[in-house]
Figure 1 (tube, rainbow, N blue to C red):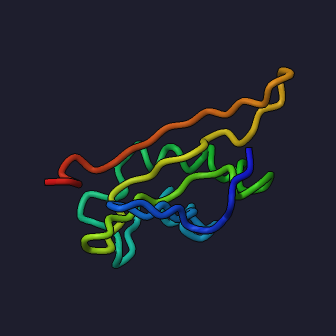
Figure 2: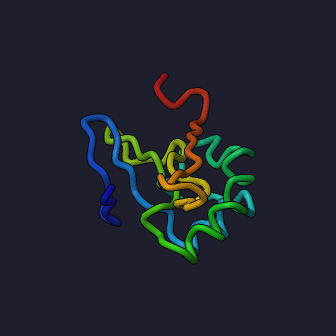
Figure 3: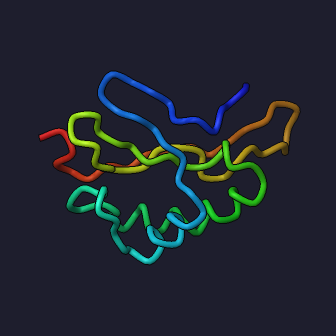
Length: 105
């Protein structure tokens, strides 16, 4: 499977890779001006400890911000929290997502 480090574009959201600096911000529970109220959640913070290891291997197999097109605010994360694992003949990865509860209200 080929992944790009470019944003993934959807009709309702953009999925933009979390940068190494943003990993530190999220892990600390801090916010940027383009983060929606309630983001990052505690589980976003916890996931960043796993993401920091993935970034060293291959950034494309990392986590992305879920950014609403309607207002440009990040409302959660989605992605690969363990990178590609080559423990079997078929590569595997741990995936997950999180969004603040009122993201689509």
